[in-house]
Each structure stands twice: as C-alpha cells, then as structure tokens.
Length: 84
Image (cartoon, rainbow, N blue to C red; front, side, top):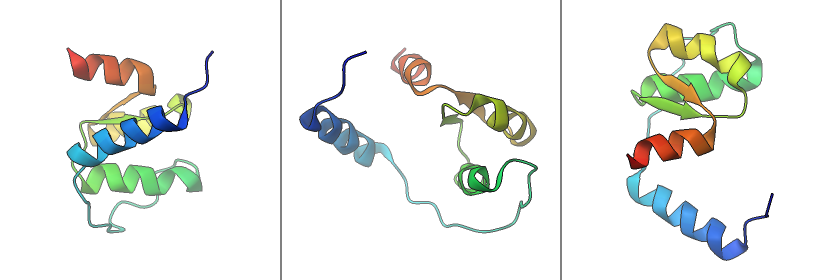
C-alpha cells in the first residue's frame, strides 16, 4: 500500500473542511457500551445527526451505529459510496 504524501493529506483535509459542520458536544447518551475511547465518536455522531461514521473499528462501533441509526464503514468503502 502506498503512503499518502503531505500534499495529498492536505488536499483531503481541505476537502473535508469544506463539507464538515461543527457539532456541539453534549453527554446525553453515555455510556453506550463501547470502549471509553469510542464514546466521544459515538456521542459526536449522535449530536451531529450523522448518517455514517468512518472507522477501522467496525467490531466495536457497529452495535452503536445500529442502535443510534448511523452506518459504520471503513473509510475507503464509505467514501466510494458517497461518490455514487
């Protein structure tokens, strides 16, 4: 697998910045049963009314996604599905 260049990473981050919406963080749903490190991601997805969460941690995040109504996918497949 080829590593991304700094320029490619900057381009991706710039593109994400253009479509991201700031989300106020609120602790309404804790705990969700996920690992402590996952709680912030889940909470942000809930508060931001996310349709999907991109993660490599499918095992721990799928239950939360199913419970709270957001899709959980690896980044590559999620980005490809968004392009269609």
